[in-house]
Amino acid sequence: VISAAPVCHNLLPPLTSPALRLVARHCLQFCNTLPQVDTPCVVDLRITSTVRSASCRMSSLVSSRSSVAGTRVARSGRVQVRRSAATCPAVRASATKEPSEAQPLHPPASANNGAAKYRPGTQAVHGGEREGRPRVSDSLTTPIVQTSTYTFKDTAELIAYQEGTYGSYEYGRYGNPTTRACEAKIMALEGADDCLLSSSGMNSATTMLLALVPAGGHIVTTTDCYRRTRQFIQTVLPKMGISATVIDPADMDALDKALEEHDVSLYFSESPTNPYLRCVDVPTIAEKCHKKGALVCIDSTFATPINQQALALGADLVIHSATKYMAGHNDVLAGCIAGKQEAIDAVRAMHNVLGGTVDPHAAYLVLRGLKTLDLRVERCNKNALGLARALESHPKIARVHYPGLESHPDHAIAKAQMSGYGGVVSFEVDGDLWDTAKVIDGVRLPYIAPSLGGVESLIEQPTVVSYWDQGPEKRAEIGIKDNLIRFSCGVEAFDDIWADMEQALAQL
Image 1: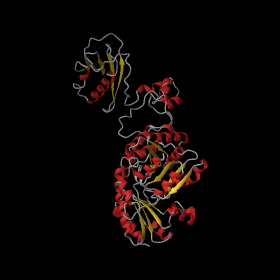
Image 2: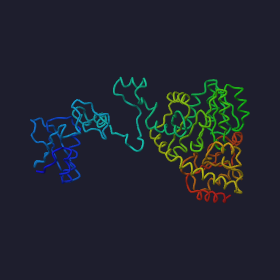
Image 3: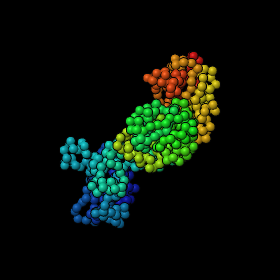
Image 4: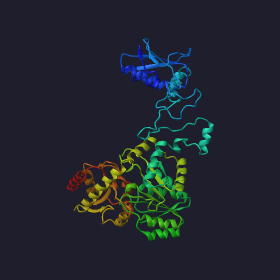
């Protein structure tokens, strides 16, 4: 017989056996979850040959009250505990008290007790989940809520949700906790009222245009832009009676004319643009457009919120291909739009109809990438500026396009509204299409791929990657030169990037 202290919460110190300590600890934890009773509890201890493995089975003894005023361990291995308010201060709940709102760390064992009620096929679907789920709020990382729909306890809870008094989600297309966490982080980075994450940057752009430009409306956009954006504006929107004025990014007189001659609903431009990295004067454009009641949306993918705060500069909305710098690892497709609440509400309503929902795991990858955005962009900025300066002085390079260079036509604008100039450098080789292709094929460090903003450096020849089907005449019309290269700097050491580029240029 091993005697113990007279009160249950002091049971552990006198027990010298590690196995008994372990079992007694579990017993007390179980006892403290029970309502206050005067009847003793009987604990059957079953200790296996391994000290690490111990289990206890507890049951309430319904027999007459015991005269023992403490705890004892008998030869049979039974622990008898008499619990009352005096001996167990931790146990205060009455037998009828509602359970605590706090979720258990793990589902209760009773979650699987329906075996006698349900057949195996039903248990395979509901067992271990329906009556309790793990607590995840203590997880350091935001959990991936991989679900397509959400449940409600009863009709009253569903009505409360519909009336806005119960916070939850209804269906995956309308929202997701993981996605919302990512949206909240982007809102903080951009200083936005709200944010909507979607399946791609193009989905964000097209949904925005469809939501904010009415049938018969007019858009002002710029000459240098992503090809698919131009394609949507010039070929899809006209089917709805929506027209567009296309101006040079720096031509404010053309903007004034468009605002006077048309009922402009929206000004939409990248800044910096793709692929020549032109920068638009956001404060001036916002002032002119707002006077005429037009919204301003800036695609800030190449800048990121680290280098440029488009909303603070006066834009109503800012768009990103989150695939690029935000996610930052070339492993996910996503897009986002952030800005004023009223505008985002309109875009969200259209999004709920059209779809384009981002997968929760993709949202998590963007969320994870955003945590290192500042560090990665700082390195990319440094690498790109170093590369641009080195290329500008190289005899086999005809021209370098980078807003951080004094030679760039929009350098003054970039200097005024950007804290860094981005990780993309475009430059023209002193040669023809095939000389340029020789440089592309000659580098060993960057991958030949049509994207940007990841940790790996990427290189492409826009003529071949994006405009090969256009033909020389069409490419010349939209300003795409055959000797143009776009280089997206990754986070590699700059000395390695430049040494590799030098050896490739030496082959010309």
